[in-house]
Length: 463
Image (cartoon, rainbow, N blue to C red; front, side):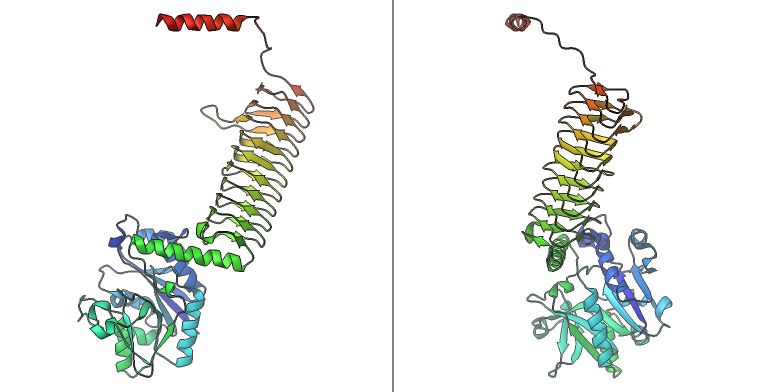
C-alpha cells in the first residue's frame, strides 16, 4: 500500500500573538509540526508534503529534508491548502493522510487504525473523529440513523440541532489520493467563511456514490488544535501526562506525575525513581536504578546506572555509574564524571573530566580540567582557567589530595599522588608524590589586635 501524507502548516496563528510561526511553538520540547511529522513518518509514507505559508522559511529550516514543501500564498481554507499539493501528488496512486500541523497530540497508532478501517471498509475517505463534552468551534460529524457518515458541518454553518452533536471532526483524514484531488477541483467557497473547505470533499464523494467512513479515537486529546496560548498550555499538559505515563508503564517510578516535566526525547531505564520537581529535557538519557530529584533539571545529558542526583542542574553533562551529585551542583557542558564520582553541594564543573572514584565534595569550581581517579578536591578549590584572553587547562593526577581553598592557576599540572596544602596558590607544576606549599608564612604580632581596634575606634569618633 502506497501511503502519502499532507501536513497543513500554513496558518499564520494570529491568536498566538507571537513572532514565532504557529506550528513551531514547542510542546514538551518539540515544535508541534515535529510531533505531527513523527506520527506520519512512522507510517512509512513514501512522500510527506508540508503546506506552508507565512514564515515558511523557518518551517523549512526546521524540517529540512524530512518533507517536501508547497506554498499556500493566500489563506483560503483547508481545501485550498490541500489543493496546493496537487502538482506533486495528484498523479500518485494510494492513500493520502491529511493532518493539521497544529495537532501535536495525534498518534501514529491512531493513524494506523484509521488507515486500517479505511482499507477494510472500501471507503474513498475516512474521517478521524472524537467525542467532546464541549464541541464548540469544531466541525460536527453528521450521521444517518444507521450510523453512516452523511457529512461534516462547520461550526458557523451548523443548525441548532447539528450544534448539539458532540462527535467532532479532528481535521485528520485519509483519502483515496486520486479521488481526493478530483473532488478538490469541484469545491466552492459558498459558505459563511467564503473559504474552500476540505470537508466539502466528503460531500462531493458521497454525491458521486463513494463510501465515507469514520474512526473515533478513544483519546479526545488527539483532536486538540492549538490556536492560542491557552490551547498550547493544554496540549503541553496532556502531552506531558502521556509521556510520564509511558515511562511508568516501562518501569520508571514517578512519585508525583503532576510535578514532573519530561520532554519527548528523554529516555529512562527501569527501576529509576523520579522525585517531585524533576525537569528532564532534550535528548537526556538516564540509566537504571537511579534516584533523580527532588528538583533536578537535566538537559541533553547522559547518566549511568545507580546514579543519585538531587537539587542540581546538568546541561550537556555525562556521568558513569554509581555517581552521587548534589545538592545544588551545576554540571555545565563537557562535564564528564566517571564511575563512583562524588560531586557535592555548590560545586560547578565545566568541560572537565573527573576520574573514577574522585570527589569534589563542596564549594568548588573545576573548569577546563582533567582529574585522575581517587583524587580528593577539598572545599573551596578553584581552577583558575581564564586569564582574560585565553582558556587554559588544569591537569590533576590520580590519588592526589588538593587541600581546601587552593587556587590552581592554569595551565598547570599536579601529578599522581601529589599533596597540595590548604590555602595554596599553585602556579607551577607539582611533580608526582610531591608536597606543594604556596602561601606566605604566618606571622603573629603580639597584642596588635587591640591596637588596631583602638585605632579604628578613634577614627570613627572623629567622624
